[in-house]
Length: 583
View 1 (cartoon, rainbow, N blue to C red):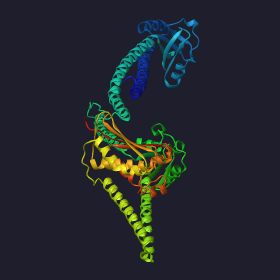
View 2: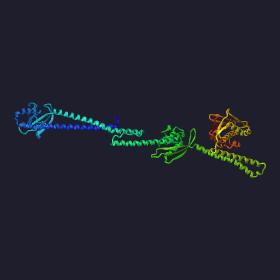
View 3: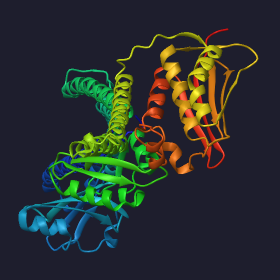
View 4: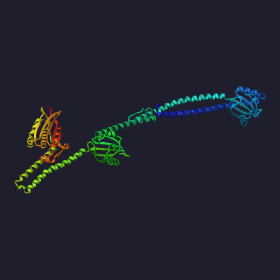
């Protein structure tokens, strides 16, 4: 309370008002009482001059001095009797021979004119302040009777009056100031409490309440404030809840969200935006977007979004360690003047890749189907043109038709197999499969092909037998495709090895060859459909370009992974990792 400005303002106003009021009242009271006392003294002297005039008219001139002394002693005044010429005939305060003419005295002049005169001044004769009252007498030798009263007693009484009045005024003022302190405190205390509660609300501490101590306007204000505080607290709680929900939504979004103000300063960015744009945006809050990102497309898009009420969409090529394709959708925040904009970034890199893969797939399928169909069509046309009747060539042409038909059949079969695997329509029966038996069966199936190409086929078994959790047909197709590919691309005299071992909870299968190898730039794409490192050689060897893609999808269906390592001219190693069965 003692630090409250409103308390000191109220108390200061009350203090000034009370001090001025009581001071003015005391001054007026003392002035009025002084005048009253002086007037009473003057009226008493006037009455005495009447009595003195009547007494003087009955006396002879010789008795004047004696009677003047007697009356002066009895009334404690100074008596002066003055002739019409101004000569003093009798005086109780001084010897007559020392008294000068009194006709020029103010009170005498007034009495000469109006019958009575009054004057208050310092007397040079008796050397003290005096009040003089003179009355004209129209009988006898004494023309003017004057009575003078020393004002020392009056001054003493007035000083006593001053002490009494100012003491009473001071005591009353002190009491009034104490009362004003109580009143100021009573008024200011609820207001100080209200101010503290309002300040707490501005700092976000909702629900602050003040005690309602009275039923007056201040009490009504306190009750209204409490109701407002409760409403604000509920509103702030709801706003905080909504804000937390909104932040949780933003954090869980895979889309990047960036909020800008009207000056293009960053106000908010979620984690996805930092990841997509490759910058720590939480540290960039408050900076201009064009200071953080030197990207012409993005800055032009921000300018267009802030300049229009319509949503804006565009695609961005975002550079970085990993190039991304981003779709930007932005809209200006509602309100006038406009308060900024919200930008949403979608990562469409995968969609772009899928679109490219789809286009390549369509082109490759068309090309793969077109080649054997063109050969068949050309052979049929040749037969129809007369070669059918030529025994030396018709069988050869029919054999070519059969070969291309088989090639089409293999291509269609591989496409159907790949489609079933991708759509999970090929049910897998997972069971423990001994890898020794699976490897020997694969070796048996591929032995004739290896001998025909003069390639040595080796199975490298571990010391202890082991099994993998897999589907028998899927595992056989994986091994056949990998071994068949290794044989195809290994020149005569080379070697193809099939190895398997246990590692933690996985079974590791490896097909290692000493063939031509794969260039490093082609390794990331060898598992794509129809991708060939050497197209001419692949077609000559009868491949469809779908074998490794089928292998990859089968391995993934078994819950495993496949990787490839290769050196040009030194051979390749394909590693399959699938779950291992318990011993």
